[in-house]
Amino acid sequence: MIKKSRIKIHPYVFIILTFLCVILLGTCCLMLPWAVTDGKSLGFVDALFMSTSSVCVTGLSVIIPAAKLSIFGKIVMALLMEVGGLSFLTIAVCFFAMLGGKIGIGNRYLLKEALNQNSLAGIIHLVKRIILISFIIQIFGTFLNYLALMKTYNYEFWKTFGVSIFHSIASFNNAGFDIFGNGSLIPFKDNILLNISTILLIVSGGLGFIVIEEIVAKRSLRKLSIHSKIVLLMTFFLILSGMFIFKISMWNDITWLQALFTSVTCRTAGFTSIDMSHLPPAAYVMAVVLMFIGASPCSTGGGIKTTTLFVMFLTFIYYARGKKPKIFHRRISDSSIFKAFVLFGVAVVIVLVATLIIGLSQPNLGISAILFEVVSSFSTTGLSLGITPALNSFSEIVLCFMMFFGRLGPLTIIGVVNHNWMTESKENIQYVEERIIIG
Image (cartoon, rainbow, N blue to C red):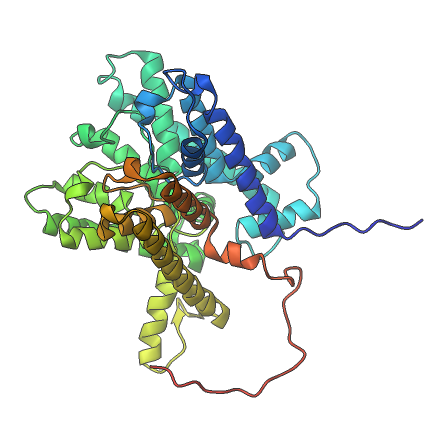
């Protein structure tokens, strides 16, 4: 018998297709009349924008979810955020494995690529632990949110519970959507418990699933991998530096809690306890920088990632000293350095191109507001200077592309053209090295 050869689908293509399918499904659900309170279904572009923003855990919105969406619409958004944050592939494989199904080598390879792992060993066990830990964190966050909000909603159990679980999902998945009303967490700027619970959820989701799993499993900072140590180091450094910059630049208009919250939320979360449309220059620059950097690899956030910045910064320092970059008695590989600079370069180019396109389409919005919106979309942050509802359909589509590109990551999109994904590429011909004049 002649065996039919299986068509090998590129793992990155499969990951991209799953995200697209979930976005389209979410768009169809949000277009249903019963997804909105007034019974008038959202237009296709608006529904697509909201679905993309939910799946890509961004938080930008062309409507006010609290007023426009029905309970069904809010449940759809919550599910889209959960699937987008944890990835459909991870959730599907986890539940399939729990039901006793056998996970083939192809699906295991897909998971390895989705989670940026170096080996297939223990990948299913890792996925189960990631899902379990993620749900436990969100349940704990729901409990804290309930305690913080029960007085606000006059101790109405179901209403308070609904808002609490939605906010917990949006916070952990770094989505930034709220159903409090128009103003995000500004009305709750003095609610210490809600601010602290939101910060903890955002940071947990932004650290990355691998780091969280390691912290739970090893229970000692000394035993953590170099990746986890770098992520923790960079996370706290960026949070603290951002907090001090925001406080110093807005000394009389912001409390230390608001400065801390703003620093945390600028790293891909999207909630706000201050009016972002009145940021002074220093705070504006800091916000854009934090958004562009974003969260960490294998997390619910976007951006170029903390490890990318760390590798680039370390390379600068060691290059000036004429040495190879190293950290924790380990030398950083040339491939990691190459990936970091490629990722940074591609991110800068796509942000500038998108800003230029929207600027040509709607020059009345102002370059600073457009750049802020584009970086917010790319980093899946969801913060805005207030121009999102004023965007035309063309600009919305551009930002949808930016959110999709940012959530999957530039390297994932670029990796699609790699035809040697099953094996490491090796060139048969060795070329003479040429030195190009740089600088």
